[in-house]
Image 1: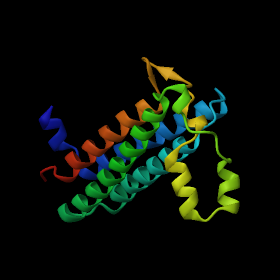
Image 2: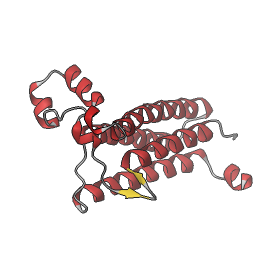
Image 3: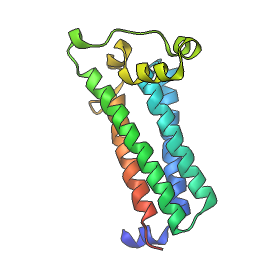
Length: 167
C-alpha cells in the first residue's frame, strides 16, 4: 500500500481531494433539491468551508507546487478543516440539546444578509437557531453534521499526509 502511495504524485492526490469534496457537495445538493432537506444556517457555513477546502485542493493540484508550497496548501486545507470541525461540533451540540434549551428560530439567512452587518450575521450563524436542532436525513445512524465532522477530519488528515509526502 505504501508503494502505491509513493507512486502517486501530490498533484493527483490533491485532485482526488478536490473530487471528494465535489462529490460531497453534489450529495448536499441532492439532499437539498431531491430529498427536500433544506439546509440550516450552520449547514450553509459548513458548505462554504467545504467549498473553500475543495478550491484549495484544486488550486494545489493545478499549480503543482514544490514541497514548501505543497505544505502551505496542506496547512491551509487543514486549518479550514479544523474550522469545519468546530462548526460541525457546534451543530451536533445544538442537535443534542434538550428541547427546552434549543435556541429560538431567528430570521432567515437572506433577511440577515440584507439587513444586518456582516459581524452580526456571522455571530447569528455561529450561535445557531432552532432550525439547526432539527435532525433530518441519517445514514448508518449518523446525521448530516456528524458526517460533515467525519469528512472534515478525514480531509484535514489527508491534506497533511499529502503535504508531508516524500518525493
